[in-house]
Length: 167
Image (tube, rainbow, N blue to C red):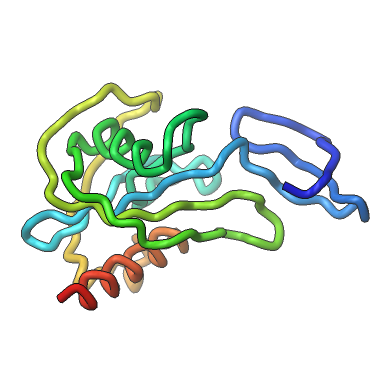
C-alpha cells in the first residue's frame, strides 16, 4: 500500500490521504468472490441488503480474506457460510479492483464447481437469500435492474469465458 495518513477508520474502510493530500478509501482487507456453478449450469447468487442503497441486492458469495487464511481457503469458507455448499473444485479467475482510482481493495475471483452440501455458521447479522440464474444467460437480470454490482457482472463474465474455453 502507498504511504498515507488515516483521516477516519471504521470496521470496513478507512478514509486516507496520499502525500499530495488526495483522499481515497482503503478497505480493511482484500476480499474473495465466488461464482458457484451447479451441475445444471446455474450460478448461485445471494440476496443481501445494501447499506449504501437501502434495498436488497444480488451479489456473489464472498467476504474479507482473514489473516492467515489463503484466498482459496476463504472462498470455500464463504461458500459454506453464505449458501451452504463446499466446492470440490475452485479455479482462480482473476483479480478485480472495483474502483481502482479511489478504493484500495482487491477482489480475488474464483469459480466454484463440484458443489456438495456443507453449512458453516456465518457472521452476518441478517438472513442471506439465495437465487439461481443460468450462467449462460444472466444478462436479463442486468436489463431488469436486478443485477447491478459491477464486480459480480465482471466475475460472471470471467466464469462464463473460462468455462467456454474449457469446453
